[in-house]
Length: 279
Image (cartoon, rainbow, N blue to C red):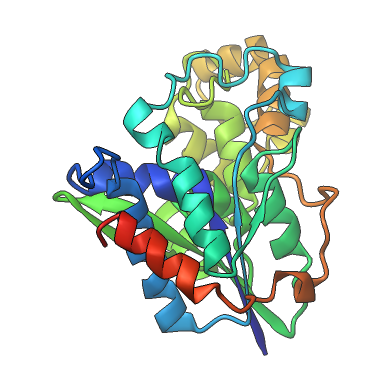
């Protein structure tokens, strides 16, 4: 069985940046995000020994989600400069290590990872390494999400498979999209159903399974009158939010796993880079 590890570059860098104390080299370059990223990367490489690996990054350009909702991610704060300066450094280190970097205008990293994970057959096993719970919707029998978290100032990872998601959320991975459609997401500025939070959204989907069923049977399902009124008033936003929150599984990227084989590293360049970063 082939193994592929897919990494959400910006997400893991962000987790590392906030999870590792500030570090700089002699030239004043901040390095904590790169250091934390490499620690997480080397840990999963050692544990899983994948045959294929790629790191996907977001591109600073409007995506297809902005085309259907121009306010998408409109409230997000800009990346701190101390983190921004580490992004090109991280890419340079990965390239020296022989790791393919994927990025494409109009897509988010999630869409690239979703498409590649969806292309895995029953003879493949895929690990998605991310700090973003949105990717939990991609979990299936041969796709697990390794979620990077920060606790007590330390970065750690938690593995999510279908059983873990059922235990934590009480729903299937795909139904997480419907939960977000109702509760929304303030970090991505996804509206959801006004006045309905996470607990109620989770209860609705665990009982009725999808927003399609809820709206087809809104007059007869067993919900409080106030919840019914809120659902009715925000129907358009609920379906919009489901479209915004669903990760694309058919992005225009190569799904030939052989394209993601780890190349022979440029050992001299990689060593010099790490020495300049004082690692």
